Length: 446
Image 1 (cartoon, one colour):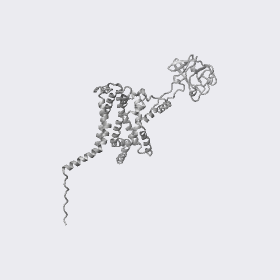
Image 2 (cartoon, helix red, strand yellow):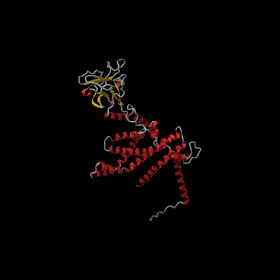
Image 3 (cartoon, rainbow, N blue to C red):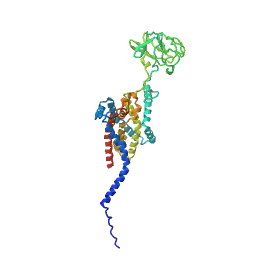
Image 4 (cartoon, rainbow, N blue to C red):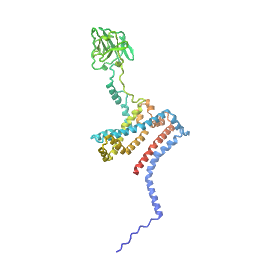
């Protein structure tokens, strides 16, 4: 029995198609409307109002045109903020990306790589405010409180030990006088076969160096100059000035030099009981206690001073965001074909050549994502600078986002100028955003 051929269904009238398309657009619009309302309320309206407000004075009553933007170019504080923001854009994303790349590559082959990545990524779980408080303490100037200076001072004192007597000084009617430059010298030359007394005061008993013993009077030795350097103070008071008394402590390690005609002819250091001995070369010389005996302890680096405050805050930012870069780069590294890496090694390439000529080029798209994301992030950095930088150096550590806050809500608030700074910040971010959109579209077309 022959089968009747299938026929196409009759086409819908043009009016019905129009109504269906209109209905689909209405449904799509209904779903998009909440998002569009939120976009307009939270993004479009603030941007538009900031642009509008930037054209008026601080009260909002007088139209000033581009005067606020001209003030940005002439205000020294805002220009400092611009310069620091540029420094942030150059240093912070690059450093975080490079560290993330290094961490991702080096931890790929080790068994404890996951634990290391967890430790590096952990700061991302901390808020900017908490990180700022942490690093405010890390950068504390006092080495007994600030970790950075504790480490720095420890390394410095390993190679250049601190003096044990920074507060030592001559007492009343002392045989020692100021020689200039922080050194002390005897009033009269010393003679062989006699003893010299070098009394000092001002060192707390708990600060005396290890090995200190009760001071002892040195015995006169023919052909030698002997003497005692000691703390001319007895706990509890009493005793005689410029004379050895029981319970007074020797200055262990005190350096003594014999000086003739401005030249050091011999030198020695005091024993634990403060006694010392010099050869006949010291006969007729002045005894000098060099300034190195009294040098103030090394106090470390002023991390939060005007010079280093911006690099110090950038260091805190890198500590937080290097983990973010490491995780993204590590994910990209996992997708790199292992055959290419092994083929390069078989062809004789060393690890550095494999990393530079294969790994990095293949990771270029991921590195671009990380770098652009961090650039946008640092353009609006605010919390870390506000919390870490002390008030006395905030002008030196200033960035655009912080200046926007200070100008708009500070003591001498100027919402018009603040809005102009906000517009400037938007203009600076736009090229990076457009580049990111162009890059994503180009990747989607591949």
